[in-house]
Length: 102
Image (cartoon, rainbow, N blue to C red):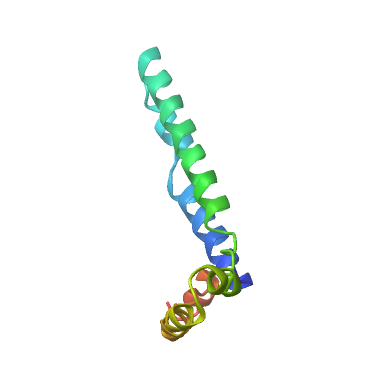
């Protein structure tokens, strides 16, 4: 992922962590069972959040067009490559950039 894409993922993760008041919610829990369920919820949230940060902060592998040309044939692969190259793929901006306009 490009530098601005990584920055966007990092900023979103920080925002998600700061939007949840884990300590504030923990203070209102009364029973041990509620505290146990709360700990499970927080652990699950952290696991999912960590997986999203690592999975979506990596650059995708480039397509090896030559590999497919050998197995399928040049004509068909060239058609797919041309279609793939013509697709619009958005680039993501850093959230810091967005705050300038707010």
